Length: 167
Image (cartoon, rainbow, N blue to C red; front, side):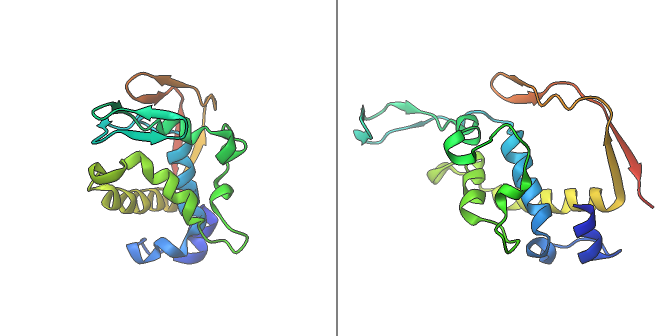
């Protein structure tokens, strides 16, 4: 990420116009969101009518959840879901695979109740991560354990990281 940031931005601060110009940064952010999802289940929804989904009959008024954690760990989608590989979001031409990015967007909700702040969140995350990695080096001091404590949300098991100014 730092090499791409240095090559494209040089010493200037990132802007939103840089978002499409830093595909590896974007792919890394998507992989962090997939690999370290915070919310294993989306907010509950209910069916507004009887629904047939595959071999299931779902009655009107049934409470349903989108299993975000299950989608992000599905071997049929990700092949090796426990490995951290930002490259899985990039084409051979080094552009973002939009279909995979759209899967990650499900953590902001689905349907009419989708988070209205998802675009703002993704933009702020891009600016924040790009700025941090432009200015700092990070060294993992313990781990990586990639374990999670899963309750109503997910949080990582404890780890230590060292942050060192680059300049």
